[in-house]
Length: 490
Image (cartoon, rainbow, N blue to C red; front, side, top):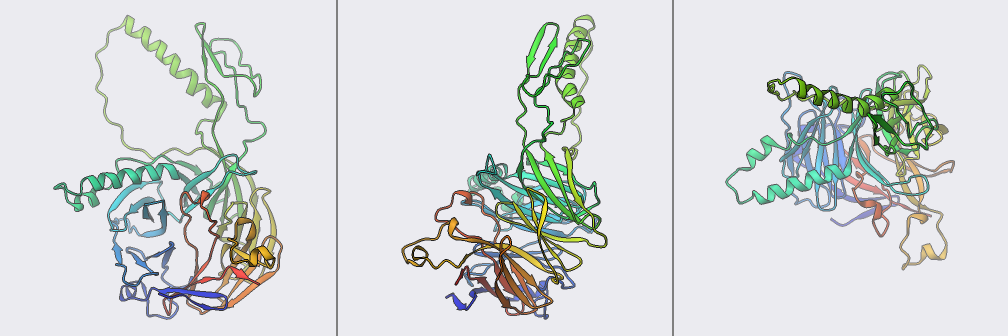
């Protein structure tokens, strides 16, 4: 389909089809964020996923002839399980759809509708699935790509490399079984539920249950963190020589060198009804207390020594070991950093900038708060935007120099300016504001039944060349038209 430009919007395609009637299409404003029945949307470079309580529809917006796929996950009718979150997981040559349910299950499906993976994260509703990556720079010592699972009072993090490995293994096994007698039905029923993905999980409900949250990036450890400890297991004292000594356990004249802790710390921002904004330092280790270090290092060696002596004295018959029941992963340590309570203000939605250094937070009083996630300070406030939806985007603002105007120059990251697109459905307008304290650079009138969307982060895109700026799309639910906000602005 040819692209048509209307001043500040460029039409890309149309998603109108009969399959959308199951999701409420045909009724005025069925896709509006304040609609009675919540419709979930997830956008990719060429595909759109739409979900209701029990069905996910995958359709292509760039090619009308592309086949549409309906996915009906196996949900528990007894627990009234429903779909509560969807998101694309896009790698170099792999693209799957991730689904979160009201019972805390994370499901992954192929574009053919085959179940790839099923895993319980925690008991409770999955509110949101966030995919993001941070590039190594002056503020980040290492790059990181992850999938963040947000639940009421709980945050879980899956590393992107673990998901990539699991998906590659599944697709390779599926391809090798293509000529086997085993049917695709068996693959769909079994999935990959036996191979659990490793993840970290934290309890962040100190200030009440959250309605949205995000891991903003990697942060330094606390100033008083003890990296090294010397423990005299059989001595009369426990001596700490500071962060420059190594952890040694002296047992029967034997010394065990443990080494320096290499764990990471993450910063998480949560919003909710009791606390508008809360921030936490998340630790990877589930045993960071001094008692935990002693128990994890000293006790196994102690019991091993006692067991060896007992075997020499008593002979006991081996006891059969039963397979333990699968348990949910225990929480890692989450330390509170700050909290903002301003009754009756309640946090509603949160969106992150590409680097994670800024967060836009909407509240119940019609305000939008711009939060510096490193200083944990609100640096800007907009008023009069009830039920607003925000996304960060990058635009070429006031770039009238010779290099930018040249047809041979390909704009790089330094040529773009970070902006915030605000969709105010009650006003029927989309505004674009320059960050952090810049003016409003664009205002677009839009229909009532529109929704602002943004393509999911693509794993491995941190090293993309040429640079692909962050864009925002507008989906008109009444006409089915999908358009993109032009990033060129004089």
